[in-house]
Length: 130
Image (cartoon, rainbow, N blue to C red; front, side, top):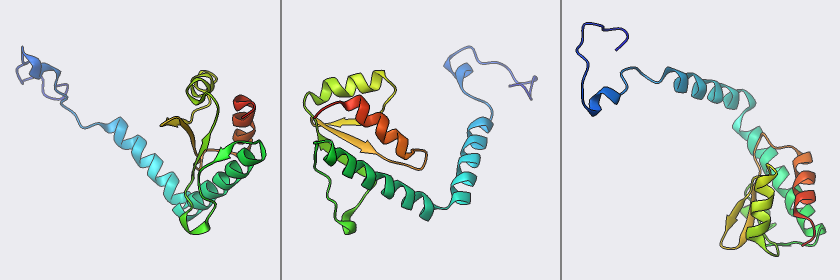
């Protein structure tokens, strides 16, 4: 290791073992958690649910069949909907840097704090007609 030059080096697979704590990962996760705690989980949740509601409404207005319930008690920041040729659309959107999930032939949007309402316009433009 870098801090113990007196230790012998292994000549087998053990030579690939890491010898130091993952400081970079620790610093990144720490910064991520400080950000989350600074914004607050309630605010992140509120924003995410608001975006999901906007997405659900926009997809319905555009003519897509939304399967996610609009019931307040069972809301989540995920919206699942049907789209003709969903696998092909998923691939095309992915190629344009628009990321959503494909689950059992359905498309699924997951809103989170880093998303913005303008992302919905980008999604709808990328989806085209139902």
